[in-house]
Length: 76
Image (cartoon, rainbow, N blue to C red; front, side, top):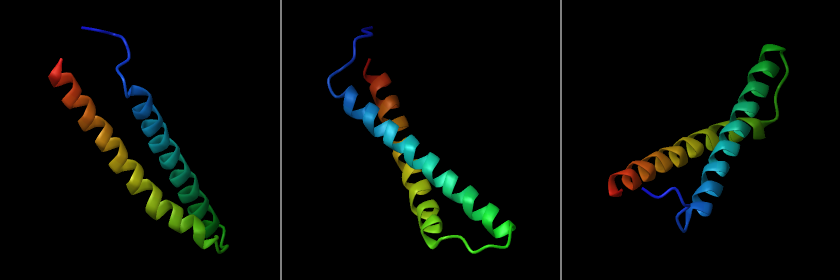
């Protein structure tokens, strides 16, 4: 077993970080939408779009990372 980083790991780290940032942005925008609706205000429509698009995209990206990790473990 080698603990050295494999070539291409840096790209996957960026990919995973992007997925986390997308998920956090979507959750923050969803919280903003919910709080503003609760307060009786009309939130910016962009917050709805960010939540609707970024959260599923982050979920799919994280699923791809899990599948890659499982495939990589099986090769070892």
